Image 1 (cartoon, rainbow, N blue to C red):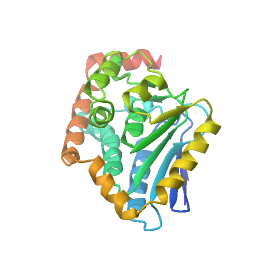
Image 2: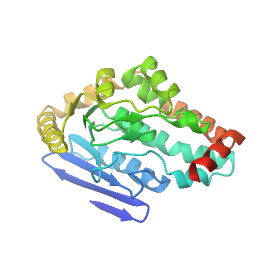
Image 3: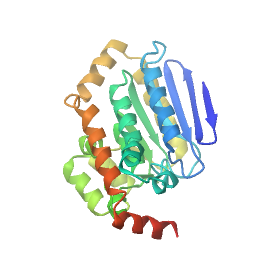
Length: 255
């Protein structure tokens, strides 16, 4: 399956019960809302596909894995409703990954910022290269990583989440992310990463699909309230993005 347009690209291939989902965007694989919605829908489609046992999510190129939400669209937010809508994109995506009946393996080949960290955290098992540093820079522009906080905290714990969030200008290394549990393993090269992804996904797809489904449920126990929680968090960010502090910070960043 192929889905392409000017707001970014989305490709899905299915082979040997493994669906590989590839997204891309010229701006460091960031997400305009339209591309986020397409990715969210694709997880729902794959969730009900009996030919799929495992999903691998990856991004295009050899640069950044994902720079988060579209900066241009963030700058265009003009009222609280638009702000809540903007930030709800990642809320819907994370919930789609959470509710997906298939186990999701993340391939993080490069740096991840903001929502990109959220995607890596929402995967059930994530492998990365040594270049896959992570950063949550939201506080630096007057907002916060409110929507992705639950999934990042679930993966690495509240203390590590706080360390990342409060050090908003600081990159955390891939080794740090692995030590905290975000990455299951890290590799020196993309080639080594791809070999590990292929091997792990093949093994996982050979297991009993019913057992995989039950394991997925276990991994996400206690998150049923996220349907409302993440949208509430989106509303918080949607309000903060209109603050004088954030408007000034965004203007300086753009200039």
